[in-house]
Length: 171
Image (tube, rainbow, N blue to C red; front, side, top):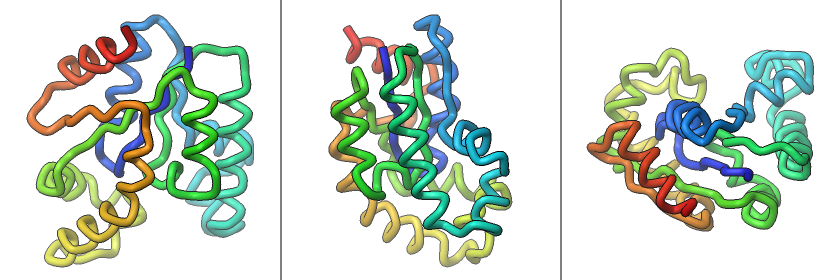
């Protein structure tokens, strides 16, 4: 079983992924951590020293390698993973299921504003400009996220409620 979670930054992919993996008694894999292990550099170092193109190529290779393995896992992708190259096609063709964790812009802004400094993509954006940035960025990416096998709306739901909804999708 390979369950792949996609969604915008701060949508809960890692938090929900860990809990889902725990309840399913399978491994949890964070794609960014797998990329860092493969490259021998942190994601920040990868971007700084090798650039985004190298990162995206490595991301695609690691994603494909994971999805072609014989292991069962819940995979939390990066927010941009489904939006580059053939990544979303690779996910939908090779995962048991893919789930888009969907949140409204106000919910995302609430989460992102609390952890802005740990998110390089938005760390340098003024709080007043954040709603426009997130709205535009989400609009650009949502067509990729929408290709997931299932969409789970996460607004005002607890982690356990979202996990149970995904378990229902899994059957």
